[in-house]
Image (cartoon, rainbow, N blue to C red; front, side, top):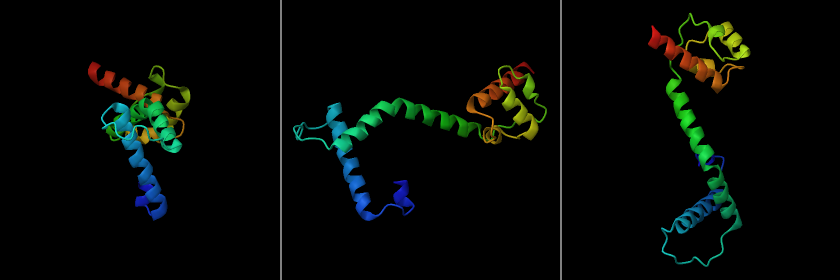
Length: 136
């Protein structure tokens, strides 16, 4: 859909996509027992079956990624105090502490875009700052 919106998918390819998407939706309904049962003897396009198998296999991972993305979006504008001693944060990797100290990002979102700082590092910084606020 995004490719279509950007003008990268022509009409013929879009029709094929929509047809497969509709077939996948119908097959999902049948598999859940929501369908009428009619046409259950029809063969399933192997490409549609492969698509649904992939969706089923990776659904948990995709949901987790969506939740993490939403959580990071909420933290995008969370301010970072200018006086944070990143070297004092327990468990923070030395590379992340050095990078954060060097660049002094003003928000958690900026920190997450620095090379050498990963999501686990951001979590440690966020937890450390919350504990610091609670104990203050």
